[in-house]
Length: 242
Image (cartoon, rainbow, N blue to C red; front, side, top):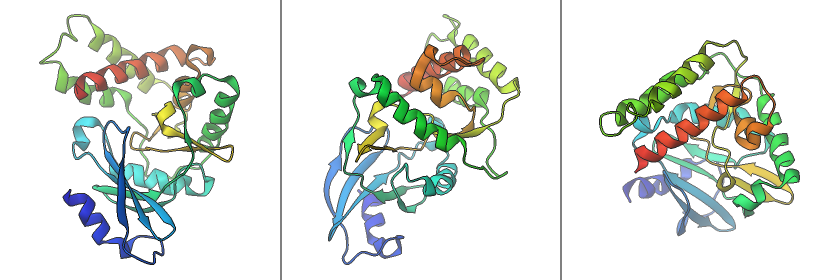
């Protein structure tokens, strides 16, 4: 793979001191969008993520992701980033336990994730991060699908867009969101939770990650709308991915 080889060829430019050129050990399975590889250099274990190049259609903003990762670096709740551009992201490999659906529903585990989300929400965000426009985000998916699906016939498109427009019109203070808090993106090591895969991250509604975590059990003025929005986006993404 050219992008993987190109990334490794530039290993001396990574923000990590390595004694030798990294060698790919294996591909890390489980990702649904990108391809990730475990590389080893001496005692260092490194993840090289080769980005899906369909950024615009999938709603990714790689430069925004890089900015957000820099903002949360001091929290120590995500892998350390050694290099990133539009094509690849090189990071530390967290050797821990990857959560499953069973772990995600345990109340004490939810509290651990809540603590991480709370830290993220309190990060001061500079002016250059634009507030997430949920109607624009949904419209990007819809315009790719409406010609080949029955979304208009079942009114799903109209309902989803109405909720997105409503959320956009409300007054709320935006914060950094991960926006993809699912079991596969949670790694536990030494009783500490790490969040991986930040490509959907944005400067959005302060409750959206908590609604993903607690569902309707999270009490907020926006809970129902945010849950419907998330489920709708998941549905659109699933159709788009085929």
